[in-house]
Amino acid sequence: MEKIAAIVTRVRRESPDVVTIYFLLQNRAKLDYEAGQYITVYFENSSAPEGKAYSLSSAPHEKWMSITVKKIGEYSGRLHALRAGDVFAISEAYGFFNPRTSQPIVAISAGCGIAPLWSIIKDEYWREKARIAHVFYTNKTADDILFQHEISDLHAQHPDLSVAHYITRQPELGDAFRIGRIDIDAVAQLGDEARYLVCGSVEFVKDMWVGLMQRGIGQNNISTETFFE
Ligand SMILES: Cc1cc2nc3c(=O)[nH]c(=O)nc-3n(C[C@H](O)[C@H](O)[C@H](O)COP(=O)(O)OP(=O)(O)OC[C@H]3O[C@@H](n4cnc5c(N)ncnc54)[C@H](O)[C@@H]3O)c2cc1C
Image 1 (tube, rainbow, N blue to C red):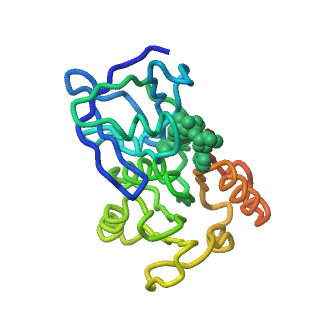
Image 2: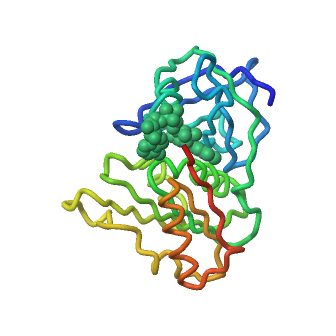
C-alpha cells in the first residue's frame, strides 16, 4: 500500500494513557474517508514493518484528521512521542464498520474502542437527517472516559442522543455514571429495529456479540470492529 506523509498539527492528552494525534497531509489536504474507517501507520526500523491499524476518531467534515491511541507497546509508544510538526507515514483510509442503513445506531464500546464510533456519531449529527444514536461506553474509571466533554456537548445540542457511561473499578461516583459492566438487556432494548456497532478488544467484542445474540438480535444487525494487537 502507498505510504502517505502525515504532518502532526496537535497532540491532545485525553486520559493518563491515551492521546489524540491530529494531523493533515501535505498542502493541508485530508484523506478521502468515511466516518468509522481506519488507517495503517508505518514506522521504519520497527518489529512490524507492515504497519498497525488505527481508527480515525475524526469525522470527515472536521478541519483535522485524528487518531486516538492508548499507550501499550512499540507503535503506540512511538505515536505518543510525536509532537506538532512531526511527520509520520500512513495509508489511505479503509474499512466498512459504518453501515449506511437508516436504523438507529446503538454504539457499544470500551476504552479506545470509542474512536471509530465517535467519528460515526459526529458525522451523523452533522448530517441533516441523522440516525439517532444510543451510546453505551465502559471504562475502568471516570478519568479514562475519552471525549467526555464533547459527548456531553453533543448531547446538550441533540437530546435524542442518549449516553450511558459504565464504570467498572470506581464504586464511589455520582448519578451520572452506572457502576459495573454494561447491561446487555438495556443495550438490546430496541431489538432488531436498531443497528448495533461494537468496538473494543477481542474479549469485549466477543462478550457483547454473544450477549446480543443471546437476546435475539439478528447477526445482520451487529457490526463489529476489533482492536487486534
Ligand atoms: C482495525 C483496528 C483498529 C485499531 N484502532 C486502534 C485505535 O483507534 N487506537 C488504539 O490505541 N489502538 C487501535 N488498534 C490497535 C493497534 O493497531 C495496536 O495493536 C496497538 O496500538 C498495540 O500496538 P503496539 O505496537 O503499541 O504494542 P505491541 O508492541 O504490539 O505490544 C506490546 C505488549 O503489549 C501487549 N498488548 C498488546 N495489545 C494489548 C492490549 N490491547 N491490551 C493489553 N496488552 C496488550 C502485547 O501482548 C505485548 O506484550 C486497532 C487495531 C485494529 C486491528
